[in-house]
Image 1: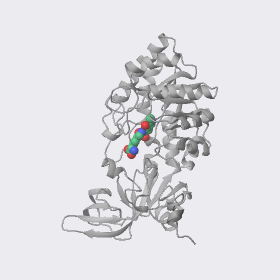
Image 2: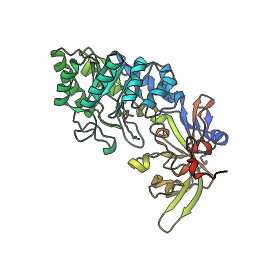
Image 3: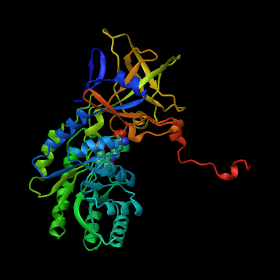
Image 4: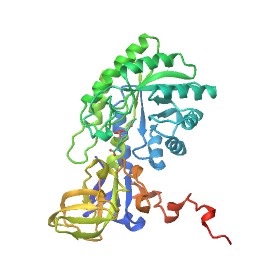
Length: 423
Ligand code: LLP
């Protein structure tokens, strides 16, 4: 459930008309609904109330500091994957004691930064990483709390680019090897193995892969405890899917109930790293039709949002519903069209062969379910400025990131002096 609805035939985010936002900040613009983020967070949290748990929002999904603050104010921690994300989280006022740090390629400088911040836990993904973390922590006279990210070898049944829990993926450490590395970690002075972690992929629409992974994690925790490794946390990652069109992913309540049943007697604190399920349907990308271009093969609708603004369709062929911001009293004729951006690549599309209502140049469209992995995956390709981000709250809205300017595009670039004329 989200808060994008038609009122008087005009698409609104909560009580704010998207037409009004577009008139004020121009297009393309990401528009997020505070009420939807809150609703999704609370629904997720309710699903786990029976167990001691911590929700660490996977901030790669949407890292605007206003959104982070909104979640942090409700008690959320963060799942981070870079020094940049740590910086953002701290800037947003997130409690470092609620931050877990995942990722296969943490650099020494990033470890130092996270050790200085005294984060809750590192999710370590290789033996070499463990040894480096041990070294960096010791150099600071600290002990790094950590989990190993175990690769449970389960098929998440999702797009190959976002499936992470198979042996062939670069993520995590296989079960056998992870037991060996835990035994090693137990004796290292700079690390304290207090958790077990996994994350098997994203946009999962079935429960069974999650539950298979949890079963494997439970076995590992039991084995480790029997060997004197004091595991107190189980981090089961994120990955719960959302409906983009007709998918029917398990509801958070169903997911929570199934997980809680499995780990009820384990005496661990559960860590969850949801990303998409909290923010995916809480954001849209508002765009304007620039031209219509019928060809002998296809009808192209050229819009002012492109793959640099929302790369998911180009990268994963993912589907986003597209709604007209102004709806006619009676639906107009239907067309089949490709919605494409101005970028010089044939891969620059937001929708292909989409059956949709006829549009005209100048019309505003809302690309739905763009709150997760939308802005965060945007770029400046073709020297396009990145869009504004707007957070709606009831009848008000706030520009939580202004549209970039041309000056932003060259910020930090310099021309070497020898290329400049000498005076
Ligand atoms: N934890 C870890 C360690 C992750 O790598 C991810 C996502 C999550 C949690 C959150 O997963 P979620 O709950 O959002 O499914 N760009 C892709 C998705 C990439 C997901 C990467 N990792 C997309 O647009 O679909």
